[in-house]
Image 1 (spheres, rainbow, N blue to C red):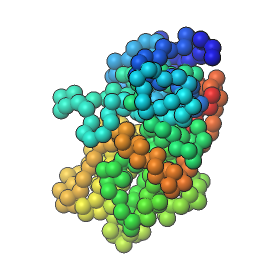
Image 2 (cartoon, rainbow, N blue to C red; image 1 turned 30 degrees about the vertical axis):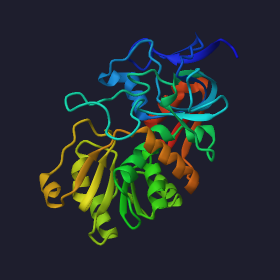
Image 3 (tube, helix red, strand yellow; image 1 turned 90 degrees about the vertical axis):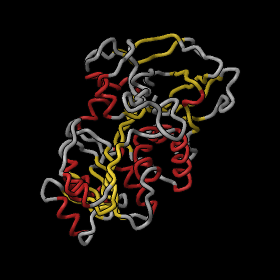
Length: 340
């Protein structure tokens, strides 16, 4: 094994400072595993962190991205969970193993890979063993890399916190990574799934994946159409991807005693909506910031059991990282993945 590796990093916040450089291989501590990266899945958050910093205390040179899959090359002397040759995926929030998330009311915890902790756009990473989960045997490396953030976010919203049941009506906004995972997880649970999009072509593709109904939000009032499709029942679960004032539409669309999972900020970091439906429907509005390691392990088990296949819009090469980031602005259908 070479003592050197290649790694993408930036010396300052801004989209044009990314550089690919050669670095020494990371040292392996007593509780660490050295993982050779096979694939990295990108999230729009990765682009926001690079361009704005998102108010995070970044350490420079900063290595971006949080979601990876790879193979264990070496382990520290006290490691018990993995051995060389094991295939693994990263966890988005290191240290959040189960239960309530760390932090308090004044300072909610947001210590993630590709943020407070180094990212994974490197040929090798050395992290504590608790920061990894065994990869599903049924997926290739690129597919497995999509689970730590997008897959777990949908799973945490619908299953871990949402207690999704067969027969529930689930409304999913858009056709990005979280949305399509939500579609697949909901269908596998026996739910009825309604997809909204401004693209007729993407709606057709979503229907081919198993969505029961598609609503073109650019040509019709999607809330009224939802009422028609559900005989005025509304949606039992809504994956709220847009944020901003779009929350008001979701408050109109949700069923009594339903649940809205606020996930995205595409329409702004300030959400707003009428209080009437919030009170009269006795609904739950829950913020979802990915999830803990135990839930990721549950998701891996479900992926293998149900033979779920993540949707990848395009696969890029390691040297094409800037092009892959740019692809995120084009509204990918599913995930954008970099293969090493």
